[in-house]
Image (cartoon, rainbow, N blue to C red; front, side, top):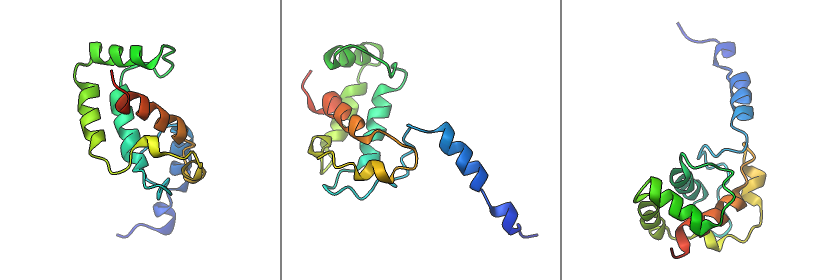
Length: 125
């Protein structure tokens, strides 16, 4: 028995998830292509992985943040940093054009995520 058109319509579910996920990247890559070639979804995934279980409202400087992550989760920054080095285009090459943010269905602040990636993965300890 085939599903009807009504049964295949997931619009209401998608809309509900979209509201629940507002501001959070789901790595869907709707933000691409980036005019300068940044793999936005991949970089945000690295940032999210590094920041997992670390308060997103952290108010300290980034050196302190790196130390906190390294203390509680040894090797997390080092692993992400080595993966980051393999990317063709780094977050620091972001020109803040905002095209990615216009495309994002979840209103992710991509520019802030790129700045955080620079501080976590491109600045020395």
